[in-house]
Length: 126
Image (cartoon, rainbow, N blue to C red; front, side, top):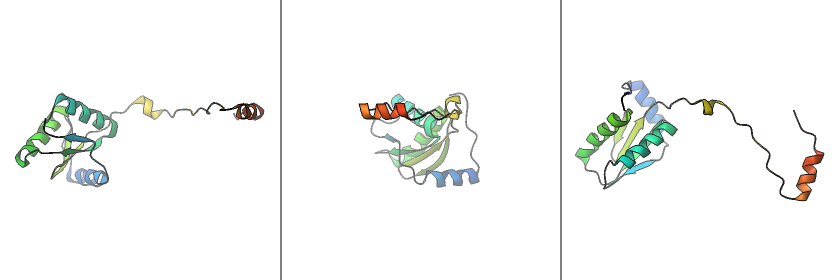
């Protein structure tokens, strides 16, 4: 990715760590390491949530920091915290027009004749 996320200030890091405390890991990296499929999944989760936890299984202690740097470089995200086998990553969520518009809720279709007759009798609200 061409664009890079600017480094986080200590106050921003502290706030993101507090926000990530209750989160569960959404991606796990195990024996196969950082494959394109794993990178794609991390990218999708960052687009959907912005702040995610990644769990590392069976990765040596020395390789974890290099793995964090590689993920952040390829996906243009910022490292928030690396503690033990957990990585916390952040990237601003892309703004979409679809999320801004509230959807209108439809009434469910009547399940039987009695409900259909009751729906016809009720006046519609405007």
